[in-house]
Each structure stands twice: as structure tokens, then as C-alpha cells.
Length: 112
Image 1 (cartoon, rainbow, N blue to C red):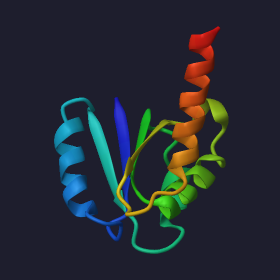
Image 2 (image 1 turned 180 degrees about the vertical axis):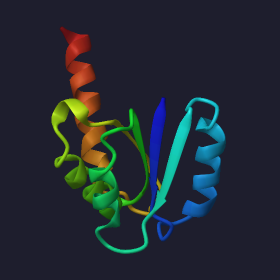
Image 3 (image 1 turned 180 degrees about the horizontal axis):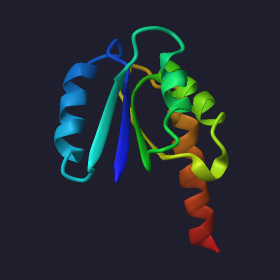
């Protein structure tokens, strides 16, 4: 299995987090490609090139996640990797609605 890690080193505490993530997942994958963003647009470009990977691990904040999701839209749906987010920013406003919506759907399914 192959994974790409897109990491934004300017997000709070990211360098430490990147090392921890690599240490955790290195035994799972045959290949891990680590891409660090240096400028705006890098995460999008990296995500656009992630179609040959099974998993895409994103370490960053709202801006990084936004770019990655937009980059993934350039890949045909059946070729997109599964995405995992490791929040590394101080605010991470965009992930709150995702968690809230996911929990609401789980609650509805449980109540039925």
C-alpha cells in the first residue's frame, strides 16, 4: 500500500507531529511520499498528483485542508485516495462542521 503525506510546516507544532505520524504509519505502508508545502498552492498541486496512492494523510490547518480538497476534485472520483486529516493548526474551524455532521448522521442511524 502507498500513502502520501502532505504536511504544512508552518502550522503550529507540525514538525513534531510529522515525525510522530511517520513513526506511527511507517510499518503499515510499502511506500510513503512526504510532501511539505512551501508556498500557497503547493497542497493543491500535491493533492492533484495523489491519484496513484491509496491514502492521503494531511497535516495542517484550514488552508491546507481547503487546498487539498480542491486538488482532489481534479482527480476522477474512483481514483481519489482516502483522505485522513491530522489537525495541526490552532483554530481548525473547517473541521468542526464535518465532525458535527458525522455525529448527527450516526445519531440518526442509531435512533432508527
